[in-house]
Image 1 (tube, helix red, strand yellow):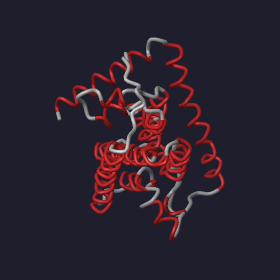
Image 2: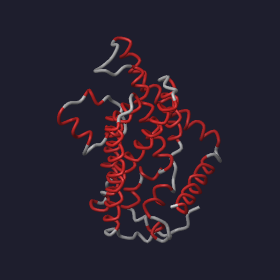
Image 3: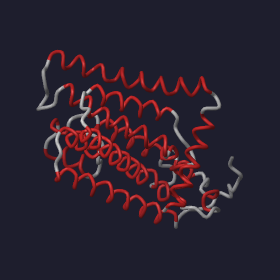
Length: 261
């Protein structure tokens, strides 16, 4: 475990240094994503100017929700940037390089690229949480735990969606739609949904564990929510690893072994 963590830290450091080689582009990507998120949040400012709350959620609660979702998404795509391209790598036979090395294939393939704009999402998430005004140590710890759970659920879910390429070939469109759907639905309070829709957001499209459930956990500590988040994160991660490993047995080499710097 320690060996793999050192390997991951080395990969992330190399990715960051590579991106920072072009400083202007690096800064523009980070700032651009922060402005994009801020523009999206303007809708809620306008909404809460007219309505004090929506089913128990106010503007402060939305700051927390957006903070967790943005930080989780940003952390996920920065640390595991290939989560957005895994289906293409599988379909085009570009997993050969990772199979040729004595490292965990899934971990290495996901972490070998960083999406720099994800840092903008992550920083915006921290700012959004700070604007909520919850500065107590326990609230900060709950927020950090919520981000870890959200990141784990997001990466695990997208791994499953991208791994469909082992069975159906080109799955990039399906994976992109799945990514857009889970992020979009995670940005709305769970109280807006009822019945079947809520069941879907806890199971097939686990957006609840990226947004609403961690946000409610930050609002008030609950052992039940802590157990739900932990089980969801561990269960989805285990399922993602199992699906990827099963799919890897079907992988067809593209003879694409090459040196990567």
